Picture 1 (cartoon, rainbow, N blue to C red):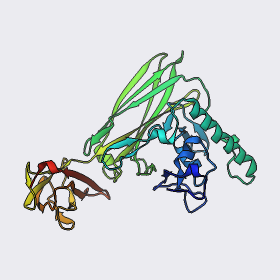
Picture 2 (picture 1 turned 90 degrees about the vertical axis):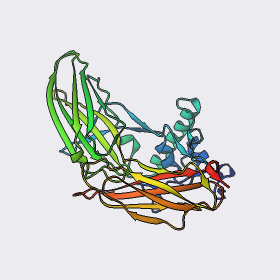
Picture 3 (picture 1 turned 90 degrees about the horizontal axis):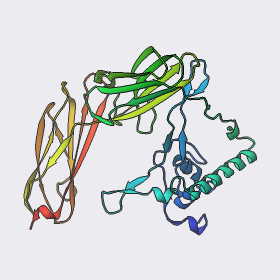
Picture 4 (picture 1 turned 30 degrees about the vertical axis):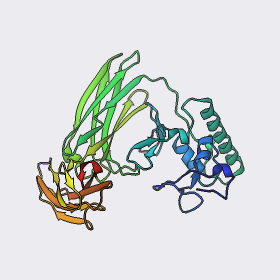
Length: 364
């Protein structure tokens, strides 16, 4: 889009945040922010370039909020955000990598110059805004203690709904002496915007590690613990907090796992005759040992069926046959979604499936 309120170089692609979580000059920050300004670190450009720039160049540091309201930094692997940015391609369903449009290559001279430029603007804003609520120089940084303990948390990237979540935790003592440690494992579901729910599972361990000794634990998060809170995001955050009982240093590890819905399948006949009714089969298999409640399936297809169709599904394994007529020989999609409720919980689950029907299997 053209940005007549800015210099001509800032017209073109603009960034918008549809799920903004912070407030700026308006009700909330959402842009439009010129992509060129984001790439060059021009954080003073309207609107909200600074927020977008920070989101793709952020280093995340974990702080532990203790019971006495003291914040203590946790040691562990640093997490970076914004390393990869992608979007749907124009005119196709392909995922397109657009990282190069938003930032210079990692570690390049251009990236360092953009970061330096943004930092200078930040320091200048700190000096000119006497009423600023936050002074950047007062923000504590990570303590640089020698890392005497190492913690590694490993889990599957994704698991089908209904299975227990396996966890493997390895703790290694790098120091030259014996270490008494306290390990706390936890799990909680996470909303689509990254906000966690209340913890749903927790286990604690106390043990002693000799010098250069490792201890590996294998534990499971039961399905019965997370079934009520899995939510529509289907995301679980697994954490491990390790405390050195002698020095009170804290070590942290985190993994996120996706709980996958059971598959919803759509099958077309091998050959379809144009302008003649045909049938698509939509099927779903309940992988759980419990009955699903209030199951509803919706079927829609522009150019295939008239209006959206709604069906009441059976509680276990079921399939439906849906008749439609292709109106022309162009590219069409038949989409289907199912929503269902887990008994004795507040959890509603939804899954969607979209299948393409191309000209190749249509006979005229």
